[in-house]
Structures are given as structure tokens and as C-alpha cells.
Image (cartoon, chains in turn blue, purple):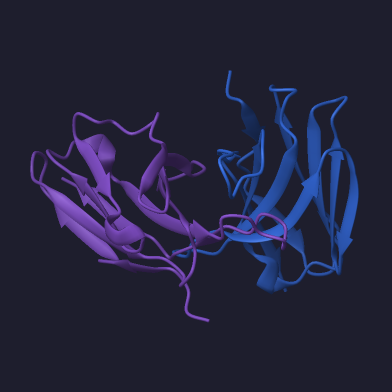
Length: 114
Length: 116
């Protein structure tokens, strides 16, 4: 069993739709939860970051963490064609940029059609 | 602010040959990472440096992969001899030792390796 599971998709939605992306994980010790966006032939870029459980909102993006269910979600409102990319969830035990190792899901490919 | 620079962007080699990738992190970033991303999968950490020292290389196949970070700045990742399963994107990333901006790790655009 992988530590982090993510449906690879692809997911295709019409412009303006609400998109829901999800990951499940097995290690209950994960404390830091992140969503990265990766455009074709580019490196991942950080979208959202959450510590422990709860919700976090940034513009059209909302990240949710449910540690009791070991389940995290990313919601995209009013989706745009420019949101078409691969979305990677990632998590770590400790502060990632110090000694914590990021464990990534395999990514979900999203296509938003005009 | 310049991003993480990597070269070459694309490389095709035959199996058993060697290849080296170079990374220049964002200025002032003490932590440098090398990730391997196989097509259709998420990135996997190969090695993490804190300044000159190795913090984590537990998933680096040390019989064929090596990495160094001289003077705590640039880094080189080498593969010798290459196998077909090494075909992947090699992502370099960097971060401040302690970030107040929410654990931001900045990735380069990657070096695409095809082993034939």
C-alpha cells in the first residue's frame, strides 16, 4: 500500500465548474499537507499549505484536511482553462523545508474545457 | 528573483552510459533537494542537502547514483551506469533553512532523461 493515494484521473470539467481533488494517506503521523500544481514540462509549484486539520482558503482555492479520516481535499471554484494541470498532494511528518521529507501522491490530471 | 536553474533540460543516452545534471538553487537557500519523477507518478526524494551536508539520502540508489554539493551552492547529480528504469524527470528544488512563508520549496523545471 502506498503511503499517499491519489486518483490519477484524468478529470475533465467545463469552465466554471467546481473541482474536487482528493488524497488519502496511511501514516497518521503526517502533520503538514500541501497541494502543488504542475504544468506540462514544468516543475511543481506550491498552491496551498495546511498544518494539521482544518480548512484554508486562498482565492478560488480551498484546502481541507480531515486527519480523523486521513483524507485531504482541494476545491477549485469557478475553474478556468488556465487551471488545466496536474495537481499533486504532498505531506510530511515535520517541517518540510528543514528535515521533513515530502511524500507526494501520483497526481491528478485536470482539464478545464472552455 | 531568479528561480532554480537546471541543465541540461533534455538528455537521451544509451543504457550503461553515464549522465550528469547540474542545479543552481535560489540565492541564499541553504537546503537543496533532488527528486526523481517517473512519468505518471509523483516526485520521489533522492537526496536532501543542508548546506554542504547530506540530510537524507535513504532513497538514493547509491550503486549508480551520486550527488554532491560543493561550497553549499551548486549541486550535481550523476548516474553511472544508467538503466532503462532511470528514465524520468530529475527535479532540483531549494528552500530557506527555515521559512516563514509556509514551507515553500521551489522547484526547477527539471532535467528530462530518456535511457534507450
